[in-house]
Image 1 (cartoon, one colour):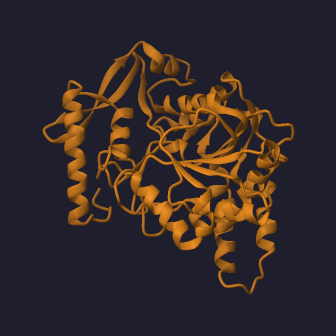
Image 2 (cartoon, rainbow, N blue to C red):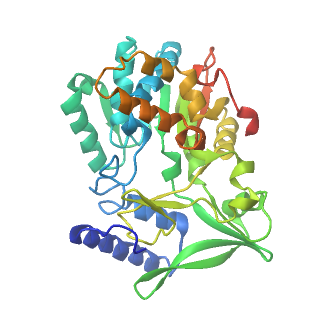
Image 3 (cartoon, rainbow, N blue to C red):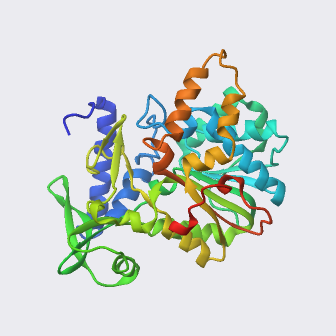
Length: 382
């Protein structure tokens, strides 16, 4: 991976510390770790994992740019849908994995403009470092909202209102499975000296095997299965008394996810705005993601007693919620207008985020449909 930017000596030492930690975990596990466990350690090991340590991750100075960092119009548009949900539920907002905090900030600003501020905006954030950055953002830019913010360590037992997760499901650990003529195998991680290596084991029983054998694949086929995403949906469903679970992420319905042409899977790594497919390169400095199987997400919610409220492209959802009207409401002579228009193009273009990113909503107890799916609902594709 010589094309990647070189890390600083301090960053490299941090990565090497995480490598030692994971190697010890592999030794304790008997010399082999399933990839989901490796991914969990690489991303979330306390003080060492990618999301648990202090490196800049979001924005132009980090490893990737998410929609809330591109333009405040993204959060302001979601605030329109949030306001409608809060009006029906008289509830609160719970954001999962708030990242830089920018989405929370713009959502609250948008809700304030609509006189629809919730009494509480909760953030479930496992990273102490990201919590600190989120708080610093509000202290610097919008201290008037601080009294409404509450950081959680675990999900509440009961909740009504809107649960939102932007690029959360793609960061949940996934298992790697390989289909061959001789059957199914799970791809895991072993050690060769001080290097991580791929090692496969036959897969013939358990939840992962049952999920694998139901996939519509043939021949040699490497792919991912997320057991964590459906488990999260089930936990949220058990908590939700009345309201909506709203997830925005990149992915496909099952039939597209496991298409014959996608026989090498969707696993991808991001390091300083370079994408690559080598999860053993610079652990702790590199994000690891996989696309979302939205069919599995919808099935988990429905099986847990929720209703599927909609599924569509990010572009369709944002248009339905009025993002173009928000841009048109700004003067073309305002500073930053051209930048906002360019960001909107990136969010909406089918060649960029508009089509690759999808939005799915599950809920309970709502009398009115969600505006984000008023036109172009693709629930039938799931």
